[in-house]
Length: 235
Image 1 (cartoon, one colour):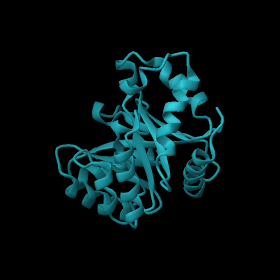
Image 2 (tube, helix red, strand yellow):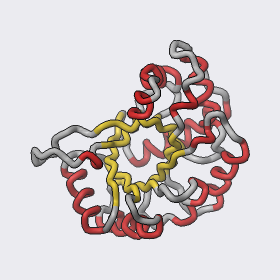
Image 3 (cartoon, one colour):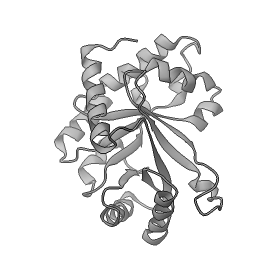
Image 4 (tube, one colour):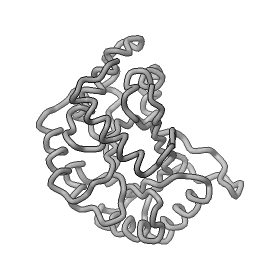
């Protein structure tokens, strides 16, 4: 699928950010770390880094965003140069950017209004990003159910919906993100295989199970067995 000029500008923003932070890479793995307190979070981040992860996403598990962001700040200071992102489950994406501490490189947020595209919501997210001092990467997780209206074989239609969402973020380096488990739960297995072709001009991300064994040969707990994989192969 060919991209419009508007879509190309958004693609360039995402590619430029990734090229600056992960030069020469075609795939980046970011471990998901359910976060309750600083000590276990630091331990989990250390294990993820030692196991070969390129970074982490800290997700608040039973704590508020204030505590999560304090922990993220400490993790980012301790592991300077290691990708540290957050998923604040108790905040809308447009309310996160202005609260981010230094060192946090990514925001991952469920963004159900992207498909179908709700202009007011998308504008609020883009405006909030522009108004903040933060210039990290936004992972916009779409609702797989919103993709089910597309015929599984109609890659062009699927791509059009996804690119509509991507084109909506003016000046925001953003990556469409899909949870593979939810796709399967919605019987939309073709979604993942079709997305690579449908959005060939964009990097995109998928939430996948992590490898079962760590570098120390032990199986992580079930809550830790997820990773956000950024796929950066063009075409």
